[in-house]
Image (cartoon, rainbow, N blue to C red; front, top):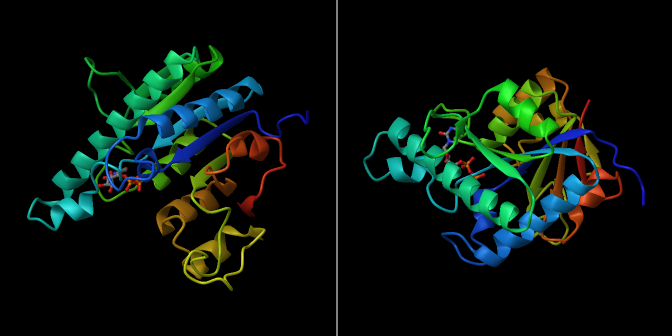
Length: 238
Ligand code: UDP
C-alpha cells in the first residue's frame, strides 16, 4: 500500500454530514462510519485533528433571523459543534481508538480547553483530537477554524470533506455540465467565489500557504485514499 503523503492533517467535517439522510440531528450509523474512516487514516500513521461543524444542530445566522442576536446565535452554533465532537469521540473510543475533544471554550466538566501544547501532546500519544467550539468567536465558521487550527499546529493540509468530489464551477447536483477542477490556486478559489468554503478560510489558507483538499467523504475509504495521494478531489494550493 502507498505511504501517506502527509504526517499531520486537519480534517474538516461538516455538521450536516452528521445528520446522515436527515435534515437535523445526529445519525448514529453515519457517525460510526465516519469514525471508522478516521481510524483507518490514523492507522496509516498520520496524526489526525478533526474540526467538526454544527450545521446539523444550530446555525447562528438562522437562529439570529428569529430575533436572537447574531453573537448569541453563533455561540449556540459553536456549542453545537462541541456536541458533535462528543458524539464522534464516543464513536471512536467505542471502536478502540483513543480520542480527545478539545474546546475553544473553557468547559472543564465537559472537555479540555484547546491549547497548542495540549493538541501536540495528544497527537504525539496517537489520539485523534476533535476540535470543538469553532474559533471561539462569532461571525466565523468551522471552515475558517479548520484552516486556523491547521496553521497553529503545523498541519500540512486541510482535508475538507464534502458530499461532492471536489470544487466545481457550478453545482454538479443541479447542472450536469458543471466542470470539476483538479487544481486551483487560493486566489482562483477566492475570485471564483466557489461556495465550497468561505472566503475567510481561503484567504487565511493563502496567507499561511496551506493546501486544502476538497473531496467526498460519501465514498467509504476516501480519507485514506486522499492521505496516500490517490484520492479524487480538488487541490487548492499555491
Ligand atoms: N460558529 C461561530 N464561530 C466559529 C465557528 C462556528 O460562530 O468560529 C458558529 C456559526 O453560528 C455557525 C455554527 O457555529 O453557523 C456552526 O458552524 P458551521 O456553520 O461552520 O458548521 P457546518 O456548516 O460545517 O456544519
